[in-house]
Length: 308
Image (cartoon, rainbow, N blue to C red; front, side):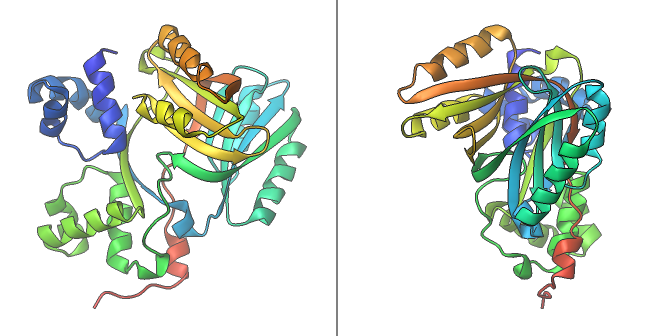
């Protein structure tokens, strides 16, 4: 993958509604150059732009990172993990553990129940759990939302449902579907994004083709402040995920690299920071599930304030 495509994809991960003209201006190239690279990816479905709803709006208050040591048919086991309701991410990985998963549950009792289920699955030797103290960067989860579920009305929910299917749907078409004018629809979408209730970003269809990048996971032990490390992670165009955690690591992250050379350079830079120890790295060799869409029935069932 060439550098312009990589940079355009990094920008679309942060703002999936950026136009080709916007991307061209930010990358100092032409719109045609961007369209030639990104258009076919969108048309083929290899690249999707979708809306993600903040889990806390849905009552999913406990977020956890799970590492599974396993034997036997790891692919079958990863499939069994993905069948649970709580995993939003499941991946087969290299390293000390064979499967990494991210679970979202309503409470600790729900997490306890699912961890017991995982430990009972055939082939599972060990399950390590990290609780997320704070998510610093993720497609699923940004800053804490400025809107509470009761402040969202039925039109907000309809907008989010439409954008979960197609995050690049135009304001005119979206407004027609939910019964709003173009300007009112734009205002609603901007409000949902700016409040943190919803994010819209691009996701690549993962495959065994390494030309789409090498996604590495990191677990860090820290003996000091994490500010420099977080800044280093966020500055990398391939950074997908950063969270402060409670458990065997102080910080976990996922960063995608175009080559092993870039991975080694980043790792050296991280190790060179004062107060940072890199405890573990793993390669996501086969990502089995990335679930960005949630049913909004939790908000509906909790009651809505109706638009006047």
